[in-house]
Length: 189
Figure 1 (tube, rainbow, N blue to C red):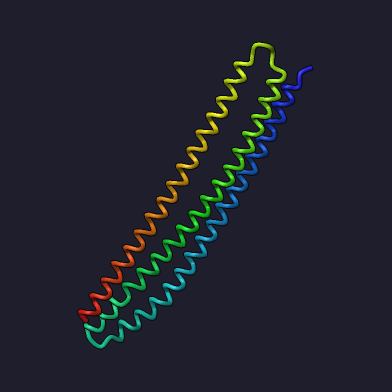
Figure 2: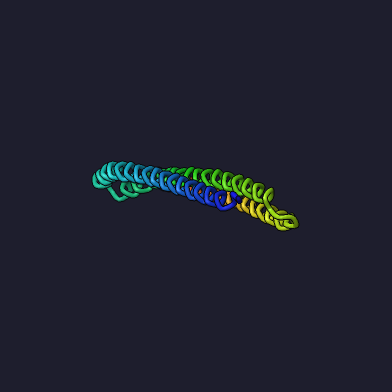
């Protein structure tokens, strides 16, 4: 007689399948990001070991304290630049991961909203007379929830962009300070 239980059952099944797909997407994205971070760290460790060996050899062969301190101060800028490059690469991985999470979430929410609105429309067709206000309230609540999510999403994106901007400014200031320190130490040497 009524197809409402079947509609709810199908909607529930579709929702569970969609949630599993999102969870799989999140897990895959997280795994890929962790793999990128591990690769980055392995490359940094390998490079650092090679450079440290070379630097130690140079410091050991210094003929006097002035040459020793000159070699030490000469390492400040390249080390700072490498640290900044590492930070930027790490921030890039984090940003791309966040973007992939946001995209998957937005896709899932859009699809869920479409299905919920479709279900509400179907239910409103079969609703008893006089329930128009309840249906309108339900549609309004769904619209308000969507608007709230959109605002939250925009705010989160702005926060990420602000964080990236602040990291870039801090990195630039750090490089500038390292360059000044290196140039002062060269002048005094």
